[in-house]
Length: 123
Image (cartoon, rainbow, N blue to C red; front, side):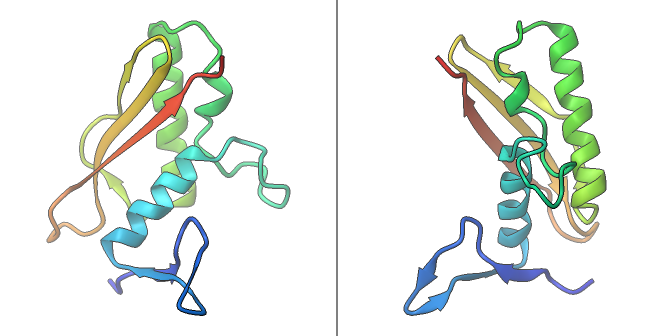
């Protein structure tokens, strides 16, 4: 499989050029972007996003955590299928912060990568 390559996320200009990222770093950037985008935020792609943001105000219980896990798995399957989950999605929380952590692999010959996304709860 060819290593993914494209614009860096978040978008930035470095040395007068659009910053580029390739390989595992590109997949990690894309995952962070996917999970930190609220569903419906993109006008042309209403289904794009991890769905986590809209759930931050809801009571933190087993049902909510199961729903968030399912939405993250769906988002990855639909929008970033080259990243395969290696471990279950783990959610840790405090009163003000939700952290989503999981391991993924792009290729079976590559070691698994970990993504940890921290989302502050709105006050």
